[in-house]
Length: 346
Image (cartoon, rainbow, N blue to C red):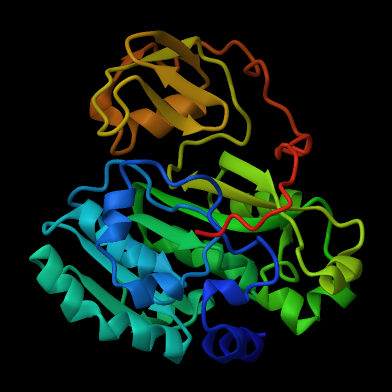
């Protein structure tokens, strides 16, 4: 599968226009605050972008960030502007052609930004322990439509957990399926390259995440995917695919379920570009100045991370009230959303 992916992304695809599905496209409209950052990225880097979502979480100034499967470096150069001269962004990819594009324009970006805070490493995301990366050294790790391409997703998640600092997070977009993908789809080189063949059944992803040490995966946003090529659509049949962004926090004290301790938080409105509300995930949009009841896990995701100074915290863990209301186990994606008959790639 490594050979398939290297060939597809290194030789078969020359630009995002060559894609046959909407899997490797932005998950939603680009927010206004991000557009100026993307406008400062070299056109060739942007044209070789094959991600499936936006992987720019808030509060990255001064952070050390790792981008897995960085490709031509679009997200690396966007993140470089967010972390600033005091931060660093490291990109890892296994495809020579993509890394060549990323590296060729490093000096161009350094001159444009006024600082050079990025570096690129060739390597496999299943073998992060073999790279020159120190355990517990990254504040944030991101990945954009790449984990599905890996033949050993458990190893990827374990490697990520090892590299994150306590309180750090893995914020990433990827492709999932409503069931386990059959062999005929998984073994098709085009479907695999288009991020469908290697898509995880969503519940298997949650199990792998927990096994790697991420007890409570949080879905940020999602949308159904459209297979625009008629031949590929016939091959995938009734399989339903979704593009989704998740965030996984490295916090040892997180529990496997959302437990109620009578806690609440108050968002101060101080996160840049989020003056009126803060969105932790799909089910937690916290209005500025308003008391917001939370489960113990959500409390820790805010209290034990870089978000702490932007919240006031009410309560502790001295009294338990059982399972937090609304903690379910059904498919998390929005299956009622309509699929547009167009390709939303940017």
